[in-house]
Length: 334
Image (cartoon, rainbow, N blue to C red; front, top):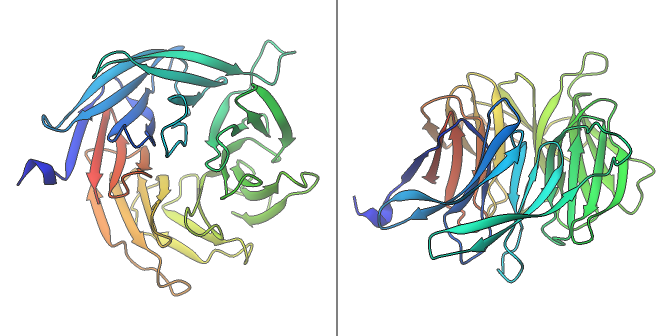
């Protein structure tokens, strides 16, 4: 097989990994950041660059991070004219700047630490965040203290903080545009918010009626059709597809995993494809074109070497998906 058509590249990290993100900049193809999952204070984030001729990943920089990253994201800068920023969450939201040192190495410096709870010596850990693609000055974070916070990361100020759920919030994601976002949490609900009218939110799905609700762990908006989003319950083998025009009843349930689902990612370039991954070591790609008819089987299945904990679909190179299992990261041509 010609090297240029290689389908899989693998990187073995020195530790178990969790956080993972594809760089968005057009001049940084095949660059990813990964975060360690070590159950102590001292953790790491690595910036990796694929050396295409050699077919292997090279560490261009590594930096210390307090606690494991719950999420990593590169600035959604598809033009490449902004500073080369990376955001992470754990105890706080931090913004880092990557500066190229040589052609293959870079240095990373923290630019901002965003903390909206200055009165307390305790912080409520952040479970996730989303960086707004339309306006990259906006980042939304979710926390175990039931709140979501919308930040202006350029000024370092919180624009608004709201109690989003009755229990811990596990994920937050913006729809297209800057106003609408959704969140999921331990109360088992998907809630829809509009920054123009925050006095009320809309519950568009509940896993089960309270008090029996199962926590919802992650959510993802369809990048091409903002009517659709996906979520999944804790310890569930299926992924729920929702149409916000038809609240409360899923338009589809994707049932192809043999063990719990851990991660979901919509295709960045297609309105009808989604990837799911889980404890059965599988990454599955589904075609939802037939909706509202039932979607029985995935169109592609990949078997990894262990439980897949992380999954990211590259927005600038949409034929590549990255998965994380154990201490291994693989990128797969799809």
